[in-house]
Image (cartoon, rainbow, N blue to C red; front, side, top):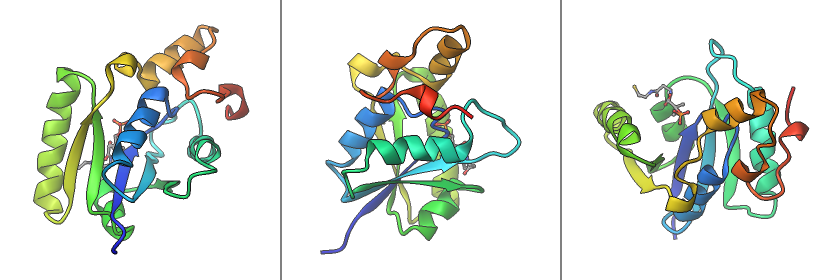
Length: 158
Ligand code: PNS
């Protein structure tokens, strides 16, 4: 049977427990999930794109259904190029919802062959965001409890 691929796009600076929960949910619906790290060269983040990718690759090393790739340009173009049928996005709250609603509509206009699938972030990780991780880290506190079990941020810092 044909493999169904979903693209899970984002900045992933860094990939968190929330993202991990969404990948697990996406794997219940799709055969393969490509975590797409949208690289915006105009925006310098905490981790360089290659390190964000390495973190995700290390985490899913034993699972051939998940891969991480860095892309530039429009998400819909990348999704099309990798043969994805869907774009996965996580929603934690109404603020996320408003943003996602607009992005879904724009992507549907430009890429009618792609279906955006919105997944709720499980409640136990709904408070987690990459920006919180970056802030907590900037003030010198450990961010271990925001990151997937076993991931050490220090291993990926530039
Ligand atoms: O989860 P994030 O960090 O907000 O990710 C945002 C991302 C990278 C998915 C989004 O900014 C994006 O898709 N950027 C590429 C430009 C694009 O395709 N925009 C949406 C259609 S207009």
